[in-house]
Length: 133
Image (tube, rainbow, N blue to C red):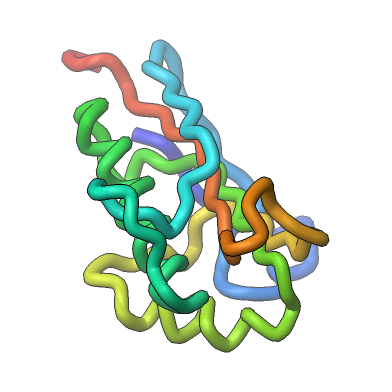
């Protein structure tokens, strides 16, 4: 099982996340491309909060397709295109039916994404011990 934690030899994290993830071997690794606020039918959520919720749902769907879940995440990068979208991000996290807090997370504000309608992109890495370990 992965150990998600923050060493006490560092200052406390600036928000609700941990500083590192220790992955015991042997493990299967999954690199997840940036997920957007676009549903399975190709429809973009109309607002930032909806796009964030959908991006997290898409990320979880990739995990499930690989027989993993949120507990297997070891790194998450969230890209928002506007600092003013931070309240929408907090509201979206509250709407999710699962907890994304305390993961090793980096939140970045970027000038833009490929399509100017896209407000968020979430990429991640996951690791899961091989069965029997």
